[in-house]
Amino acid sequence: MSRYLDPAWQIAMRVRFDFNNLMAENIGEEHGFSMAELERHAHLAQAALAAVQAQRRAGGLRWMELPYQEVDALLALAAEIRARFKNFVVLGIGGSALGTIALQDELLHPFHNQLPAAQRGSPALYVLDNIDPDWLSGLLDVLDPTETCFNIVTKSGDTAETMAQLLWARRLLIDRLGAARYAEHIVATTDAVTGSLRPLVNGERFRSCRVPDGVGGRFSVLSPVGLLPAAVTDMDVPALLAGAAYADRLSQTPFLWQNAGLMFALTQYLAYRRGKPMSVMMPYAQGLRTVADWYAQLWAESLGKALDRQGQVVNVGPTPIKTLGATDQHSQVQLFVEGPHDKIFTFIFADKFGHQVEIPAWQSGQDAVDYLGGHTFNELLAAEAAGTALALAAAGRPNAAFHVPEINAFTAGQLFYLLEVATAVSGEFYNINAFDQPGVEGGKVRAFALMGRPGYEAKRAEIEAAREKRDARYEI
Image (tube, rainbow, N blue to C red; front, side):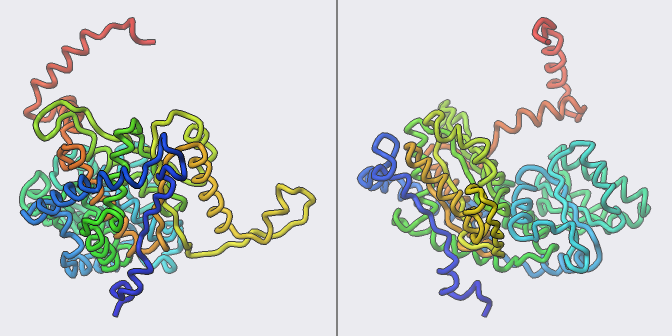
């Protein structure tokens, strides 16, 4: 039996949520929560969780079923890609890329792409989640397109950035390989039936993976969007899904004091209501740094909404702030400790790292140097993390921590799923739709118009008229 299916091992790998430093007894009554206050709101949390589960039972929230998907075909495709190509390039943006980047940082060697191919054992992975022309051009200085598989990731096929990247990659491959062979180097991850990319997949005979119906981009990391790059680079996909399934089981209990995702969501919401709209996430592990990037999209795009479900203007939403310990102790923590009382902090601590590195001793005669010898970098990072949490608590700043027993595929799947559930529950707290993103569309529509997409002529004329009214006095 695989260890990730062993109940005892699962318990040992359970991600814990420590909210001691949210409590009034530790940070003071002005900014902390009392036990009575949390108990008073337990019914609110239970009702929100029940509403999410009801949507799931009704056939919605399909992302909640991803831990139980069949992946044999995906793993077979990944094995074929892994055996044939030296490089795997993901072309996508937002939810089509951030989860993959987080998985790459969590589960691959920190310098995976720089390792010799034989030691690496799988393709180099590049995720191009932007359209900066210098960045795209620079990629060609480090890889040969003829040795590369390009993974085009867009569910709708309407994402201008990704479709432009497809045109770019297609031309590179045709120029090097010819029109008859280029499609062998492209695999698409998109909707099974609809969207602008699917006809191209069928017409050009690209290999493809399906994004399941009802799975939006920011909830897609455990779909083929994230799983194909994971499998190509030989991450443990079954363990990822097993970790998510374990989090699913843990997240179904209505008892607030046993449900980490529910407690996280409730305390974030209560802090927001107390005038703390800033939600800082601060991992203390280099491999977890881009989990904060992924969380920023998940939290902001899901919960930042103008209208509630009744169509009333509410303009709600917490603002996620991504940071990294210990790096940001030397940039942002000064503000966090002494600035406005408008933030709630969430650390992610790795309780165990894959390596232990000693700090060599040197009796230099300098106290600032000599005391470090004989300790480890592991101890120093843990001390820095604890010190920051304690300093925030001493200043009355509410902070909590997710404790990850170790960074592996099982705990990665757990953390992703736990935060997704917390987001869905939070949508119920705010009485908004956590699964749309109307605010994103405004910029997309205007970009379509400026690029001359058919059907957007009226918007283009509106933009040009507005530009003519601009006053040069307001430019410096």
